[in-house]
Image (tube, rainbow, N blue to C red; front, side, top):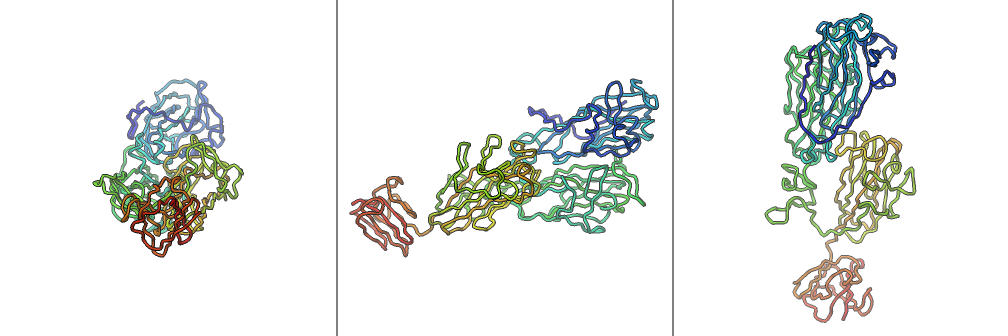
Length: 639
């Protein structure tokens, strides 16, 4: 007996611990078959899919798995970079250099059995030898979905030549919490990747993709229980599929993670990926590929039995456009019944620029080359740092839901929430407004703010999705206008199961600026969740609201001739001392069309004096108070 392992084995030492996500076949309980697809079993009875040999319960064996048998199962995983498999493989009876193998996506493990391998450790229908041994392998893997397929090249029925396995365990090494995809444990090299879209992980459907060529329709097929887009009879010669992804966040690189399936008889043809009509990735497949095995069914009539090759794609390239056209195709010249191809688990990411950066050459603030309006780019040579800052005279109006000891303001309201009136929740070490069993389907979080005079507002907070979202939207509206929206799905960055039910949590940073002059602001936060709030919910954390002072502010100076320290006064201020402004004011600039009124007592009391023009030098008063009243600016002074 000898065995061969084909694929990149991971030799990287790491201090992280593997997380087990699946374990089965320590016994013969038929409930373990849930989720498995079994094809070609000798018997239709579920119990016959197990065979006991020397007190060991084996999945498969002489009543089940021989020629043509294949068993498969699919899994969905959070972001990770390694997969570990532990399994005990078995052969029964008279093999003659046939092979037993399994796929973990594109990773292939196989062994060759002969009739002399093993001993007669238990009774079998053919009375031959039985052998088994333990397989432990660790592979690189970072796709959101994983399939495992067990099969063989056995050429006799199971009662003459059979195989099986037991004690299957699968585990993964997780990405850092900050990362939605990674190639290792270092968060610095992966936290910039932002998910744009994912397709064909949970469901197989068109999902906005279009087909061109001999097939103009997105078609799907199933290979041994594994659904793929395209496949035998669907995608062959002269077929491509494409989709335009627009409204991309400012970024400097693009990443594609996907799985390309070569099916049946290719002849030195290429699998090809185009981005923006430029060939970016290509892999040649020879006429006779070494160590390929049959997975997909033959297409009839006129179909062929050919082997399949599974190619995991993990490609990235410089990219900074606001949209991307992604196209898949193959150069095969044969019909889809002779040579075909398909795609599984497509994911698109972009490496985003730093906050409020419009164009950049890398992830840091120093790499920013232009800012989104109304932010301006700092010049590092000025000694004030780098990156984008928000120009204007901004005032923080409120800061809420910070830390873990806050109490929600009663002005925050929840409509259609399921568990009122307390709408706070905890998620690991975090405290949320909303969340698990609080704000889910049909729920809306709202608040009305009464603001002083202003010309723009800025809202910033963390928008959290809890549990099982699958392409639903988190929506922020101001005065009925949608101002921020984000789609969440399974493969988003920062995934971790830290609260709620059976699902993963994630968040995005909301930070937007908009023109706004009304004295009131109506904020509404909602989602398109269609599930109950114990299956999917939303929350917010770390809320801040800022406003920008209007241009028509009185400017006060501590010295004559508009010199010394200056202060812009744009709102009610009955006491200079409490506001920590100096009492010595020697000159005033009065905005056009405005009137400044001086008082000689606090709280706008006592004698007054009015100014409608600039005052270059005022000697007789020390001013301590200011009030705004429509277009009048009211100072209170001590004589």
